[in-house]
Image: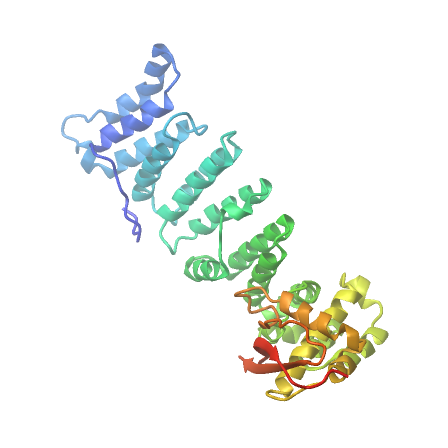
Length: 387
């Protein structure tokens, strides 16, 4: 019996009785004559000649019977679909070694049958999820099942049904006994699926995990794609994370890496100098000039806050830094507030807005977290006079 950290839960009754339950499900809708012909191979297999081990003690014969059942599964059937597949999975996984090619072949065949069925997608998701959860945590078959689930949900434009989190996916791939290349390909599948669905921030999170999983020697193009994605997304401001990726060294001589350094360490003037020097980069990496200027201004505003903790700043100082009119300062501060999404470390830090006062400006309290530039949770009333 294959080793597993999963526990097979069987219904009441003997093995033979439970197999007959599966056969009753598969033979629904058949005439008496058809049903008799369908059951005959199983009747023969159930027979125990004199002197041989009874079925409950004969693992080879039980495995033979499950193989026969698997060959007869040609669709999802009618009735208690989940119950049928749960019972089938329990017997199958308790008898077949998980690392055998035969086992993978049966799993792949089942996945194909489930996905092409015309049943409601939610039914198929539940069956696949049950199979995934029935497999041991370290089994590489979990990747195969999960990838099928992702591709099915993506094809139906229903990825939200999966409700995955980055930490959950990270834990899975650390557990699965598969090659590094297979793990990377899985993360790429996730990133592409969420990008296709329009969930750009989720896609970026998995793209980040994907690039982290690659060896530096083969990561140049994916790393450039990741940097470009981070620069394109309006609510991604945590560029320090990109510098902690091993593969970043593979692109250190590129124009995009130079731009990334500006977003981490410099300001608007340096950005504009880069823009004049690398005018072809916008089309090359599908970057939007207006979006890039907005982001560098918001980062510069955050840096200014950090550099002036507890101090009063006039609107004119902020306007000079952002290279905007004084009348536009408040709009930029509000933009910074709205760019923050709760719980998102990649967005600008939380800043609470205060009502405009014609004789007041704002004082920004700042702090640093993890080496990145972050403003504090609030922008308070301040006492400096507005020019």
